[in-house]
Amino acid sequence: MPISIALWLGVPIGFLSYFEARWLIRYCVGRFDQRERRAARFCGAFGVFLIPLIYCFGLIEDAFPGRLGTTIACGLFAAVSFGFFGLILNTLNERK
Image (cartoon, rainbow, N blue to C red; front, side):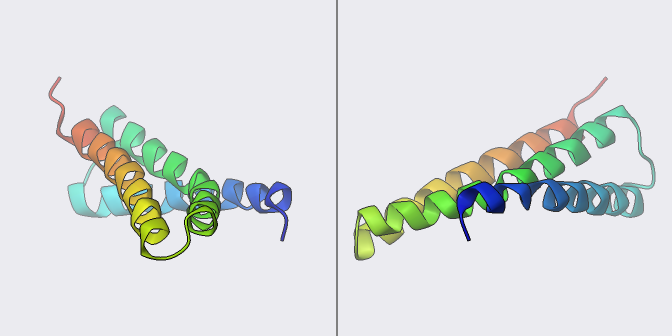
């Protein structure tokens, strides 16, 4: 599948991530204020960027064959994932 078609898959994945995060935050926290909506939007943004991130993961593994490529690709994936989840947790924990 070419990346131009695969990028369109990010939109429904982003919507599904947003709605799932919204439901999960409402279920766990019990309310859905401004900061919870912002955190759900960050989850949706992570869902949108998931397909290009996996595509870059594959390109890096092809560019650097062997264990080096896998290590670099996993490091990139972990850095971006931890960045998004850190943003989400920071948004949920901010005080007014």
